[in-house]
Length: 163
Image (cartoon, rainbow, N blue to C red):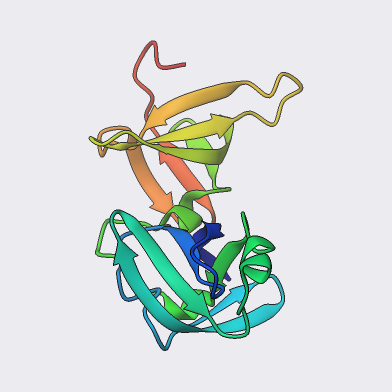
């Protein structure tokens, strides 16, 4: 399952909720689609923008209290429902958790977070060592030599001073 959004808060009194969407595919959370929250499956009955927010009405969530109980929960869909990304691009869920190694084979740690800076993403890589040190690695072509999503591995060429 892949998280495609998070419930932020109730919207109104009919069980509608405000969603913070992961990604920018407007059809992913469109009316008629199915999403999972935990072990429960919901049909999106209505979806629409309200300013900068996405508001959805989920089946069987009919009160503000029911909607409030979903606050902070992830909306997920099966990975097979997500179209492949454009060539040379990756979804965050494909990068998170990947092992990061240098071209000489030194293991730096795993990607634990992705910061979106506007110009390029930055991977937060945490060492598996006792100090749990973190390195910030810009997601730039000249630094990322290879991304193997099947193996969960990213090979990098770190410039001097980046560590």
